[in-house]
Image 1 (cartoon, rainbow, N blue to C red):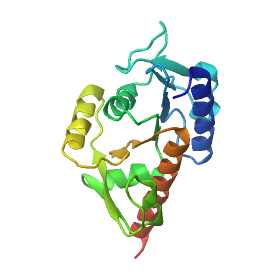
Image 2 (cartoon, rainbow, N blue to C red):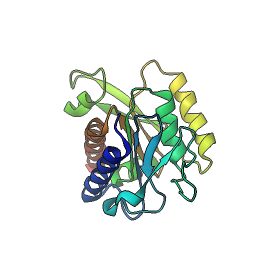
Image 3 (cartoon, helix red, strand yellow):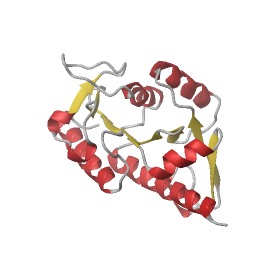
Length: 203
């Protein structure tokens, strides 16, 4: 796991990439990295992720509380920390608000089925496109501890948990062992969701 300076640089670069792709408009989204000491570096609340600097990244504990007086983490920090608490291998978490994610999550039920895509290989345990997964969709909730409890209940009932989920009408969470893996997974899922959106536009 990285130290704070290395994590901050990775978060800034990720924010610029997600901004170029149109996945973190205005103040949307947040980005985090688990640090070597077990704490979490995460984007400060209210900032544009495409224009981050070092001051836009703060440290929080695994309970989501800021470690420096005056720092204000995102309201959704608890969802990042829930991922880190549940998955010791998780080293980076990305949360974005793309158009496909927002539209599809508003129109579908409790999951979206992704099947026969080459990029399914971005998910762990899938070595071929000849596979199908159900990516969970949770109803959004401003009560973050309550929402996290719903997510954890779903995780507890599944043998293999996909490293990602959608919030209805809101956005996507994807994680990986480090920032490169998290970015790769997010790009793969976004591509598949964009394809699903296009398919639904066909007559």
